[in-house]
View (cartoon, protein in one colour):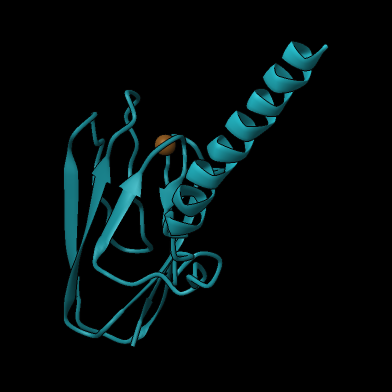
Length: 126
Ligand SMILES: [Cu+2]
């Protein structure tokens, strides 16, 4: 009986020792800082001068640029697309092809893909 009590005490001691060892490690682990931009990144106002044609869509669908900017469209789809404005257009863009146009006049320019009329984009020049 005494032997049993002894071994039980030993197990309790061992458990306490384990907890004692583990506790400082747990509290010493640095808590990762929350990403400062997570959830606060604005997605509505797209900037830059690049539009990607991907998944039968222009990305970004609406792009705002300054007057004098040359905007480049790049088709990454396997199917061909076009960039068609009122008065000028890209012609057929195969995969990997690009089309650039310089916008010297402020205004809102709507464009479509003539192959897939549901693909619409807007370029705002100001
Ligand atoms: Cu298209």
